[in-house]
Image (tube, rainbow, N blue to C red; front, side, top):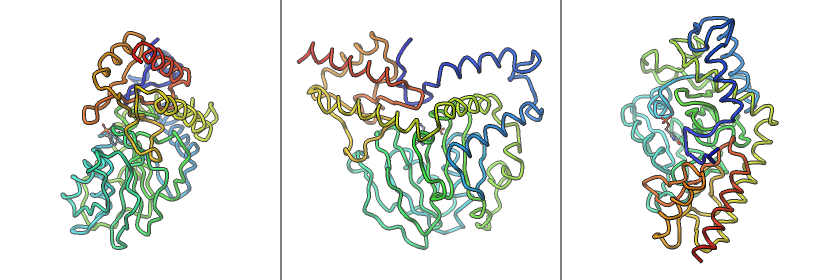
Length: 354
Ligand code: PMP
């Protein structure tokens, strides 16, 4: 079996794959999960359980709705300003990478984006910390984990305005205080489940204030009123997400997995810092626990290392094209044994090339 360090879609627990594949063949009375109606009582209980698990695992307070949507996190880049930004008004954005930048680009269709801070000049290798959010901003938007660059926000600002966060690549990996946020969104294909599903957690009271007419499929309120069933939801993705969230619950929930994620990250960063062949690319205090980005002191060794990794059963270690080097993504389902195996691999390579 290969060690899957891919950035997403990514590793999910083996037992989830097995349960999911059984349901493809026989979910209920010989019928596949792929052929039943989304309005059937069987699927109604799946979506209800998935929603309950999101609320339970993240400790979502009352007054928030959990939505199962489509269109990826990228659709949220537009849905957020469409639903929260009154015409001609300004929203504050923190620019911490390509995804944040894509979110910023969508704002112009609805109003203006005020980029309060950016780490673009440093190729997004750190999280800006010194900025003020103007009190008249319609909301403040940030990205909790920058999948491509390997930086993560460990502190969120206290805002007077609604706080909106793209948590695509670290949701369910650590405890967050949801009550601090007004809207959280995440593409599912990292720690939640398969691609094709996007989770939105929204505080109901912030909606309906733009004065804008919103097409039904892009209107959070429509989806809330219809229990995420305004149209046919991504049935299979929701089912697998439910299985995966149940797996997380059985592991002790987010607080327990956070401990494991910390241990995995500490082990790998320690090796990167110790091994003279490798170096990390990000500010130490902002190092992501989900996506560990690193390069080699001698760039000529990068191709041979990647080949060596591939030959030894490692998948998905190539860095994003805008950063180069390597990216080890270590989502919830990646066992610490895979991290230890990667560390061994780095040490064997060191012995060969020191
Ligand atoms: N935001 C972040 C932080 C991401 O990592 C990604 C994709 N990896 C996206 C947004 C875009 O997600 P999607 O492909 O679901 O639109």
